[in-house]
Structures are given as C-alpha cells and as structure tokens.
Amino acid sequence: MRDDYDKLRTEGRNPNSLDIDKMSTLDMMRVMNEEDRGVAEAVGTQLTQIAETVDIISDALRAGGHLIYVGAGTSGRLGVVDASECPPTFGVDYDLVRGIIAGGEHAMFRAAEGFEDSEAKGAEAIDAGGVKCGDVVVGLSAAGRAPFVLGALKRAAEIGAVPLGITCNPDSLMAPLCRITIAPYVGPEVISGSTRLKAGTAQKLVLNMLSTGTMIKLGLVRSNLMVNVRPTNEKLIERATRIIMQLGNVPRERAAELLAKHGGVVGALDELGV
Image 1: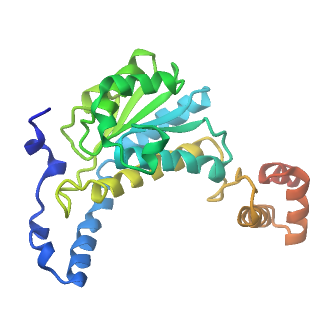
Image 2: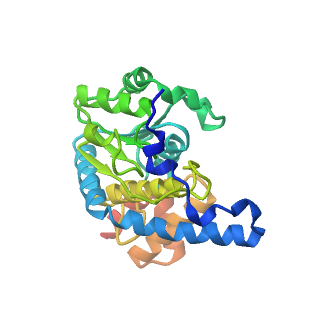
Image 3: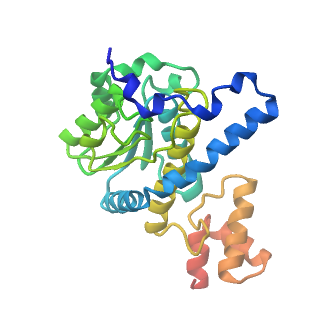
C-alpha cells in the first residue's frame, strides 16, 4: 500500500465544488460544465507530444507493428473503446489496434479494480496479448501509477515494443518508463478522485487524436473523408456511397453501382481515377 495519495494531483479537492452536495441541480451542472471547459485547453498544452506520438505510431504500423492500449478501470475501458472503433471507421484489421484492460473482458462491464494492483499481471497481459518487438504500447492511467500499467510498460520495453504513456499527473511514476508521456493536467475533479470525469475526458480526447491522426497518416482518409470505411450496414453503405459521389463527382446511381462492384470505396475511386 503506497502512502503517496495525498501528493497525487488527480486526488486533490476542488475548491469550486466544496458545496456541491448543497447546490441546486442546475448549479451542480453549471459547476461541472465550467470545470469541463478547461479540459480541451489542458490537452492543447500537449500537442507537441501528441504529434510526436502519432508519428511514432504511424511509422510502427507502416512497418508491420501494432498499437496496443493498456489500462485499468476507466482508462482501460477508454482504450478498448478507441481500439474497437478503428476497424469500422477506417477498415483496418481488428488486431491492428487492440485494447488490454486489467481484469480482462469482464472488467469492461463490471468494475474489477483489484486487478490493477499487480505489475506481474500487467506483464503477463502483454505476453498473453501477443505483443511483439516493433509494436507500440500506450499505457493509460489517470494518476500514472497503476501497477498493472507500469508492469505492462516495463514488459513492453523488455521485448522491444515502444512504451508510451497518457496520464493526467505530470509527475507520474509512468513517465520514466515511457519514450513520450502525454500529460494534460486538468486539475482536481468535481468529486475528488473521480477520474472518470475530467481526466477521463482528457484521455478520450487524446485517444481520438492518436488514432485519427495515425489513420490519416496511413492514407486511410482523403480530404476529410474515411475512404476505407467498411460498408457493413445501411448507415455505412450510405456513407460510402456519398464519399464516392463527393470525391468522384458522380451521381448516386453510378456511385452505388461502383460500390457494389468493388465492395468498398477505394476500388471505386481507383476505377474513377481519383
């Protein structure tokens, strides 16, 4: 049991919400909304680190590597969510971007907080997840001290994967283990220590930037359109059709015909010479 919780910035008390339990519901919402306003600004202080991280990830994926997010609790769930969105959005294989959460799949739906307390389990998860030399492992931890994540990052470095980190604690234990650490400081939460709030939002914003920026650099976006989207349901078929119409400058009927012929946007655009 560590005795450094009183030093963790993510565990501090927020002076703006000391009386939140006595506020009207509307005032509660105003306080939360005002606190959230600073999250994007905090992320904005880390743009250089985020850009460098995108370059590292895209280079690794281009060379045949994979991107693996590792976290516990809310941080772990956010990583799994971002990873799971990459295949339907960008048409990549499901193993290209993966999420590892302490406690396994069960922990996505029911809290399994005790699993985060073991570095050994983090290392084991890296091995069990098939992480290899040349992959990129991004550790996610609001306070930057979850033993599961620390163990995973140490093991990743040992096998030749690139260890990177996302935290909301600039002085984290995770930082020395990572080639780059992205650390937007969002300040204490409205409810002390409830890092699913501002810290969770900050991590989600960073993950959006990492995966989207990487996929753009891999050529899976033209202009601002997701040209490698898999048309697997009505919504995505309609989206793919409109992308062909917009980039190929053809009517709907022709776009639908090309989409059906090639089974995707890229083949249709290739036939159109776009």
